[in-house]
Amino acid sequence: MVIASIDIQGGKVVQLKQGSELVLQRDNAEELVVEFDRYGEVAVIDLDAAMNKGSNLGIVKSLLRKAECRVGGGIRTVKQARELLSMGAKKIIIGSTAFRVNGRFGVNTEFLSSMANEIGREHIIVAVDAKKDQSGAYRITIDGWRTQTQLTLVETAKAVEPFASELLFTSVDREGTMTGLDLVPVKSLRAQVSCNITIAGGVSTVEEIATLAELNCDVQLGMALYTGKVNLADAFVRCLNWGKGFLNPADFSADVEHIPSSLLKEEKPLNFVYHSALMRHPRMLLPVIAQTPDGQVLMTGFTDREALAETFACGNLCFHSRTRNKLWMKGESSGSFLKLLRLRSDCDRDALLAIVKPAGPVCHTGAWSCFGVNRDYTWEGLQTILADRLLHPTPGSYTATLDDDLVREKVREEAEEVCMAKTHGEVVWEAADLLYFTTVLMTREGVSVTEVLAELERRHRK
Image: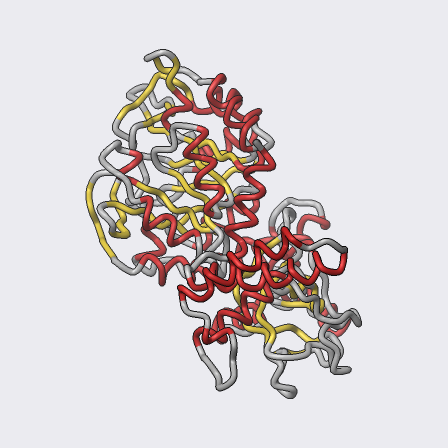
């Protein structure tokens, strides 16, 4: 997975060289997070909070409404972590607090255990950022990379792994320099821990990203992304496990043509040469599942490198047609395009989930879904309809007449009627009214259904 980083300092999006030297600054965080979210989760880092110099919580909160984000920077308590999860954070990145025990450097297992028990190990990423000391050993660096500890990278990573679903390793020496990936600590980490690992610092080419993918590591991009040295679409494609895909029979005979002479010269088994050739074949296919934001499966199809490039370029989901053996833009004849919101790979990187907004029925039969099911009426779907009515009022729309005072009055009225309902049917009727008016109120206030569900999930975990 490719993770774009949005580092916030003083209310601005910044990129710092080795955590201190300001290299660039931007003020379009909300625009960036929507764009980055198409390719993977976005890492939102509050640098001021990490350095104990303030907070950018308001900006962080606004970004969580717009994208799937993992959040880090100055998270020192379970209460803070819970609050961020209730706002919509997918994961929490824990740093400095994990490496202090009673005023000394060490793995704070009590804190990490408490955090894992309270919010769930699956929501925790521990940042094992490290810097070389004079002896060449990689040692954990904290406090916004201003304090180097005596804790060694690999042993510390092994100690914190039981409390986290993922580790974030930043090579502090390389961070912001675009001088290339430091593979030595990466390979050491990968050999010693089994959880997910995300790598940051120095990455400057898609070839390095492909190398990390082959090591089963994700990549977090900052400077290379903002300076245009790495394109997110290219990075996404290179991260996929094309060697586990398959070919159309029409393309199969061309395999040999895609075996580089350098591979044939290597003293490797034939299956290694063949697998490496497949990884390079431009027409390898991977399955894609198209799904609405509220979880309704619409269709499945297949993609190759060309179809993915077209998907990212035009913003609508494009497939490779196996029957016609060519590029196929869904909706090109019917007008029922699938607007791409985000694309995610599975844990093996050999299948894709496309979250899309359909322009109409998806199946060629005219059905909403290719699986013959009707469109579910969901809470999220209700809010989408209400948001459109409020934004684009039409003559006769009751929803459009509900100003702030009136909708609050109706919520109070319907809540009382729910309490007074006596029969099963009455409860259903009045509850529907209350849900409708409450959702209008939420929508007017910029509160999403997702945020409310996240808050309920947070309370469930208490």
